[in-house]
Image 1 (cartoon, rainbow, N blue to C red):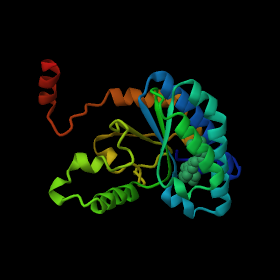
Image 2: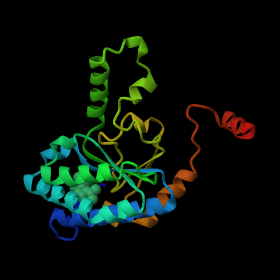
Image 3: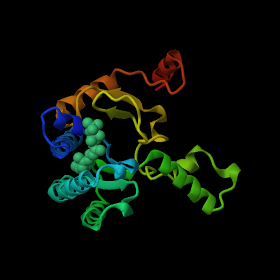
Length: 229
Ligand code: FPP
């Protein structure tokens, strides 16, 4: 969700206005994703590193997050969306944690789209945590493979990551879903997140459909597989 600050600064507004407008983009994109039939959508809302931002900005972001959970509750419940989180949720203030945990629990059995909020999340931290849990459980080195390691990541119950969108012209991953993005298609757009809406998601999905995902194979091999099926 990159570009909120720049969107506001370009208009002579405080950065938080960009975050407020960015929250509206989240609402629009989540609704569009559900209506388009996406299985899962993960939003990188707050990184482990974002705690180092000015305290006023962090406080305002926590309030926006709380507002989002409160305002979207009915829509999530009525549309069968499963809300879940990844990241160090225990670091969030109690006034965010409580409504968030309640909505995660209340929507846990839903079978529609999974909406995953990455909060106080870092990809490296998640990998270290998975390694720690394997060590703590006494997993023998020979028993640890990609599948057993993935099962220790917080994304274990999400489908494989197909498409990763980064807004605002930046072209890096910034510690987001590092393991999971190994074979994801990357889509970079200059659009700032507060301007990113349903139509922009559609454009990203169109671009995704035009990609050939080879997973290390050749195009000819892929054609053979398609013909066999
Ligand atoms: C990136 O823009 C955005 C963030 C670091 C925070 C986004 C979080 C919220 C808007 C809180 C509400 C959350 C939800 C899920 C509704 P930036 O500040 O890095 O922008 P810049 O690169 O232009 O400075």
